[in-house]
Image 1: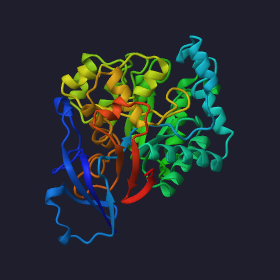
Image 2: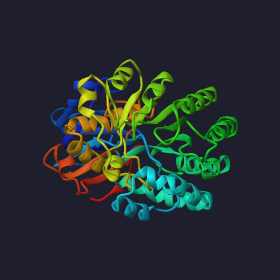
Image 3: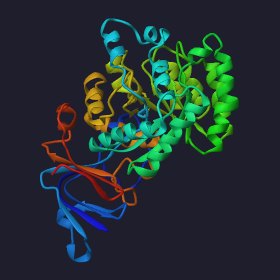
Image 4: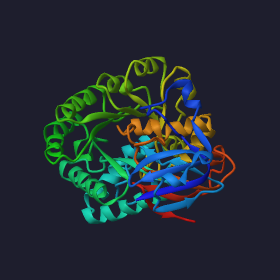
Length: 417
């Protein structure tokens, strides 16, 4: 089926030649076309251009959408979430308000350990149903691709349960989904004081079991103060790579951990969080294919240091933005809100933020050849805004729902018109 979207006020993030990522000063620029049209052919983008050059006589159109006064964007790509979980953690939210730190809550059995206990006690079907609702919500907010991590199982059986739920979501939801094994998210309570034994379990039992069922695309480790060491991370990544899992790393959220360097060493697709980044980390990233990814929702919710994004961009690095959607430190997958946080707290320009949450997050999921921009041959994943005055209005109106229509794989899946 061919769908024509016409009279588009501004067609945003267009490319005549597909780029895999956008780096440094180039992040401040976005190609756009005013008074544009966009042609979708089944699940692909077939063509686009200015309205003055549209020749309807040469096209066979099945459906037409009039976008007068509205803008069209490629859908957001969210490259870091934990959205399969059982139950919320608002009581810990109150503990944070009272002054307890993330580490203090974790040490007394809260945090990830709390979520793991709940998940272990929850059935697969229930986990699927609540995760499905979360995915439907983020689709309505403009997200067209999402990475989902395990990590609330903390034993082989429960990690497999999580990953099977994600596989079911892949099979039934219209978004593009990538799956990451994060068995090394925290040390289970029963392994307290025996961290090396848990690492051995992940390497010798969990990773082979996951690989045997082909349940993951990537492998991740929470390499940070109070969690897993560089040595632990090194061992787990080597095991994952042997089973065909490319690394993605939680790094430097709580301190300088060495996580960035070990991620680069193993050609990680991304290193994420990055509240603590200095010259050594920037130098390592500059000589790599690893995407630095910030998670503004987690830093905002936990009151953490803000990653030195300006320093990274000025050094020539690319930067990606993801939501970290999870029950404990970022209970939101709203990427438009993440855009606002990026502009307000990290002093990113709107154009930089848009590049960071489309083409660069697509790179951080290994998907930038088919997602993250409006280009001929890419997947027809776009959203149409309400009538808005400018691109800058997207992050400026941080509490407003500005999305009218979401199209995934060439099909309208959300329409608020």
